[in-house]
Image 1: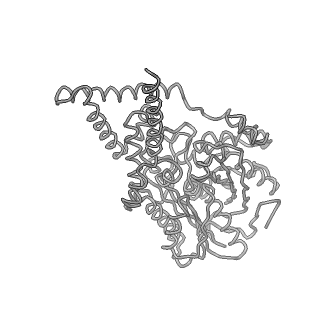
Image 2: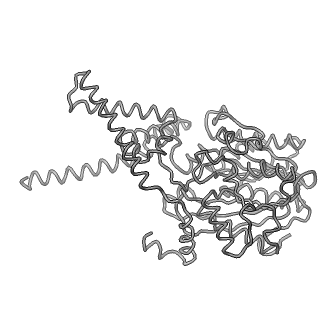
Image 3: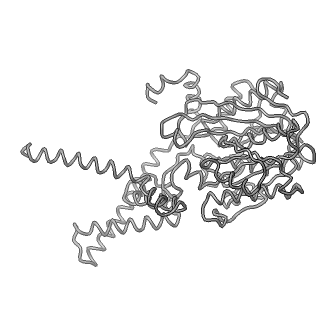
Length: 333
Length: 159
C-alpha cells in the first residue's frame, strides 16, 4: 500500500465504473462540449441563487454517474466531495438530497483528486465497494466568494484565470468495467511566497512540481511510464513554469505529454486570460474528456495532478501569501 | 518588492519568485493607460454633451447643470451594470471606466445585485457599500482635512 514517503499503490485496482459531468453556457461554447453529459444554457439553472444552481449542478452530475453505472442512489455507500463556497454549501446541500454517508472535503481546486485518492483508498482496503466522489465550481459563486461582485468592473491582469461552471463526479467500485486507479500521491502544502490572487498558476506550480517529483521518486518510475501527465488548473503561465521547473530538476518530459485541464476546457479565442480554474475544472475535464479518451484507446496511462490554492478571502486581506497543494492520482486502462 | 518583504523570505522562495516572474505575462501598463485615457475621456465627453443638453433645452446654468448630468451618467452606468455589459467594458477600459462617477455607480449597483439573494436588509442593504464604503469614508475624511487646512489658512494665515 504505502510506497515511499507519501504514495499509495492500490493493488486491488479500484475501478472508475461511471462518471457524470455537467457544464454551464460558457463551457458549452468551449473546446470539449461533447465530453459533457449535460450542458446548461442558463447560469442560474432555473434556481433563484447561484449557490442553489451549483447544488443542482452537482446533484445532476451525481445522478448521471449513478444512472450510467446502472445503480440506484441507495447503492452509494460513501460520498467524498467538496467545493469552494462558504463551508461547502452547495455540495453539503446536494448530499442532503443524495442521502448517502458523506465526507466534505476542502482542497480548493485539488478537491477532485483528493476525493478520488481517498475513494480509491477506501475501496482498495475493503472499506467500501461503491463510493461516489466529485467536485464542482460555479463562476459567479467564486467571483462572489474570493473576488469582487460579478458585475463589478475590475480589470483583470493577463495572469488571472476564469473559474469554470461545471461539476464532475465519478463512481469508484471494487470491480467492474473501466479504467482503474493504480496509485495516489498526497501533496503537502507548499508556499513560495507569492501573494497575488490574480496569479494562481504561478503560486500553484511549485506544489504541482513537488507532488509530481514525489510520485516518481516513491514509485521508482520515470515520466515515460505515462502517456500524459495532466495538471489541474495551472493555466498558461503556471503550466510553463511547472514544465520548466521539472525539466530543470532533471525530469525527461515531452512538451505534448504534459497537459493542463485549465487549457483543455476552453477554446483559444474565449476571453479567459491565462486559462481556466475552479474545483469543477479538473473534475469535469478528467471525468469527461480524459476518461473518454482513455476509453477510446488514445490514452493508456495517465497521471492527474490537481492543484489547489488554499487561500481565503481573509488571508488575502491580511496580506498573507498563498499556500498551495497538489494531489496526484494515476489512472490506467 | 520591498526589502522588508524580501527579508522575511527564504532564499528558495526568492529564487523561485525570480524564476516565476520571468515567465509571467506582465500587465500591459502603457496600453492600459492609453485605453483608460481615451475611454475615460470619452465618458467625460458624453457628460459634456449631457450638460450642454440640459443647459440648451432646460432651465439650467453651467453651474446648476452638474447635478442632473451626474445623475444621468449614474443611471446609464447602473443600467449597463444590470444588463451585464459594464464589467466586460471595464476589462477593456480599466481605469477609464473605474475613475469617473460611472465606476462608483457600478461598484454600488454590482454589490447590490450580487447580494440580492440574501434579502433586502442584510443582503442588499448590508453589502451595497461593500466596495464604495471605503471611498466614502476616506473621501469624507480627506475633505475634512482639506477644509480644515483651508479654514486655518484663510482665518489665520491672512490669505
